[in-house]
Length: 123
Image 1: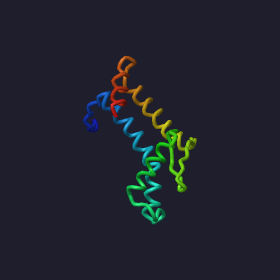
Image 2 (image 1 turned 90 degrees about the horizontal axis):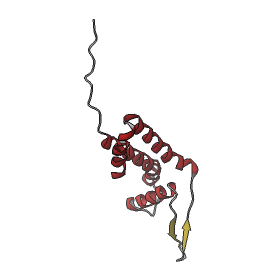
Image 3 (image 1 turned 180 degrees about the horizontal axis):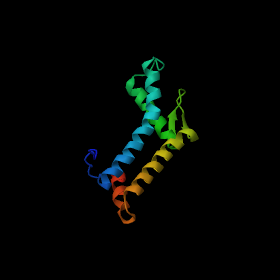
Image 4 (image 1 turned 30 degrees about the vertical axis):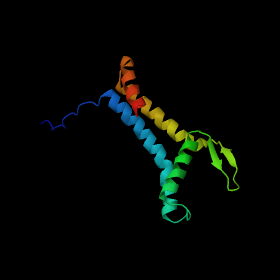
């Protein structure tokens, strides 16, 4: 007696899979920064900040996570440059992008990889 099997789904187009993989990597790396900041804001840790200010801080932290230098205003009126590369947090987007590239390479032939990369770049 043969067991019934699930109907097979159609494969995802490569451009859509590329867009999905890169979008997923970007969202996960943003959540790594925004979830702890949101938890601190909800518990009252940022007494002088509203929700928009906390999101602004999260966006700046996400940029620092990717190695972008930030020009910050000091309380005395001057400006300063913040440039740091937190290695543990920088590994997360790198590993997510590596995983996405590996999955896209497995899903396509060598001459079709441009379709997945084009979809990823569109995101």
